[in-house]
Length: 186
Image (tube, rainbow, N blue to C red; front, side, top):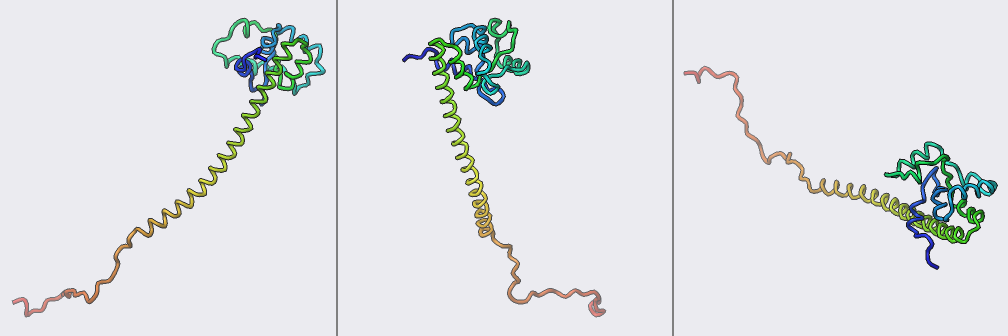
């Protein structure tokens, strides 16, 4: 089956809000091919299917922050909103397919779920890679400390001690005379 919506278009509509990956109602409505108002009405009629961990309304601050991330804001998409957007988590998006009964909604949901799975897979592999890097970093630190000790020992061996040896034999010093004898004065 061919893609109804390009993967890149779906992936670009996934945001990270409240430490969760979400999609906004207006973006989902566009993907499903329904007006945002119709999507919100379907959700409102089935609120018991959307607990707080499935869907939440953005606060004013979250909405302003999200809106400021866009360089240009089209009046159609952002400017004329009378209500703050609803944010749907992965589970909330899955639940939308049971509320919106169209074939397109089902197919789009399948694609969205696949993208969420790919994101989780990438994050898991990145976490694994980060753990390996951290392990390598600590190993290198240990090696660095040991190498530094080895270099210090080598430098100590290479440094010649200053010669403080006493010369062999006697050193002859001329005696100091404080008083000269009278006989030498002549």
